[in-house]
Image (cartoon, rainbow, N blue to C red; front, side, top):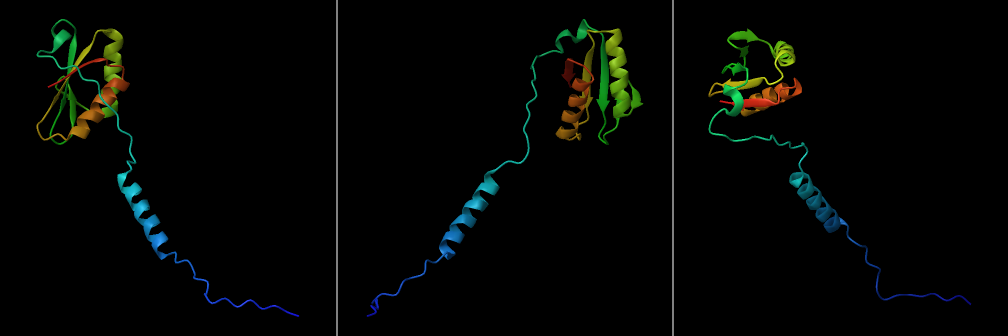
Length: 128
């Protein structure tokens, strides 16, 4: 004898559409809320004057509106600037570098220049 079980209720299929919608919305939320770049901070000491710049030997790096650089009035390239500052720092360990920029210079250009000066070994800088 064979038993056959007949159910009155049909088995419902689970709908995945709402689950997929929720997962997609969560994915979008986390993608938009995430930051994909690394933030760095610059340590800046705010003083009313240029501090030790009057007593120590100093050099002036000027950034023009078109992005060109000059060191003490002489045009220079970024790579040449680093080399010249390293040589000056070897002669004068207490070297102070003053950075002067035009009003139209983007902030990122100044930050890149300050990073370059720091990489060249310059520890004493002022921004005008």
